[in-house]
Length: 437
Ligand SMILES: [Zn+2]
Image 1 (cartoon, rainbow, N blue to C red):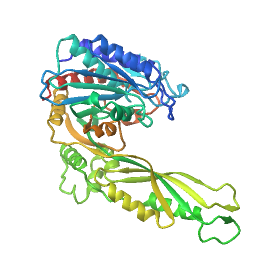
Image 2 (tube, rainbow, N blue to C red):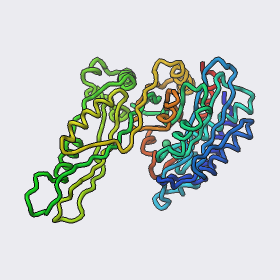
Image 3 (cartoon, rainbow, N blue to C red):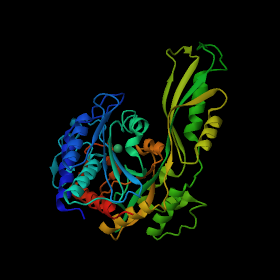
Image 4 (cartoon, rainbow, N blue to C red):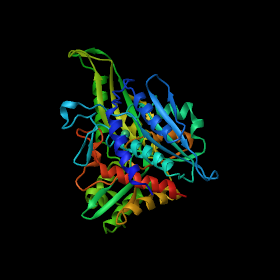
């Protein structure tokens, strides 16, 4: 069992990490190294042997291994990112890099996304060392740079160039899941991430005939692009139940006492009856594609020969081919499309012993709650670690009070977390590591 010292230490570590500004502005403008050095020092003090790895100077990652007691078992990866998105101090009630604890709440950029989780993992590792306990499985801790941009200096670099550090890892726990979701009065869910949609950022190019704006033009690139973008934006994607989402719908319906017989036939109808919990499923019932950028022309009386648009597409695991066929159809003959950036969708087994162990660890701390699987609308570093054959789960346990809008905290103003949520995270992670099969 995690002692009080480990729980208190998570708060200290999270606050100190928040004070180390690791803002990732994208395009290479970030510096995680001070945070990586800080984490490495805390791990080294606990007797671990962390290594710092950089593809680009200043963009450091930290990896350390805790040796398990049972070498026959596969290793478990626990990962979290060190960078944060920008925060504008003028918008905040508390300075975003102050790491201030006020009335039992820790404030600052990264308090939820995700220096809290990094702090919990480091505190648990230090607590295990201090109390002379070891997990059964080898545990690989990875704290990454660059998650908030391309991961090229972070998880993608680690998986691509330092695969040996992850030898034996079959499963990974990372961002985000196992937070309290108040689904109805007295009904607490803990959604554990077991799937992620893939990323499909598309570039659309319409080519036509350039000419004078006063002349007839049957091959106007702007008109062609506008048509394609409108069709994509208005497309009604069919609902597709992947195993994780089907299980999520059924588990939530059961928790709410709803008849789930219609789940397969009419998932949208069941979704509508889930109440607040519907937000956990609504973004992942289907593929999606949202037009986001348009570029064409330079003068009102000149028809350009080319028009370009961008679309943020997201694909469910198993439905990539359907997504591509839909894009071929919707763009039509006059507009080409290509991937500007692509990341794989993921889905991990729901019947894994690890899933049962995560469920038990959460229920031990909150026995009246319900543990449900969950598919993330977007993506995390787990996509990169999946290249190493590591099945990714979202598990950053946090006990949150009613009214606390978890999702709004991500990249939001006044990001903050109750310190009791961190205490809970330490207890759950410690229990998971020391009792998991
Ligand atoms: Zn994050």
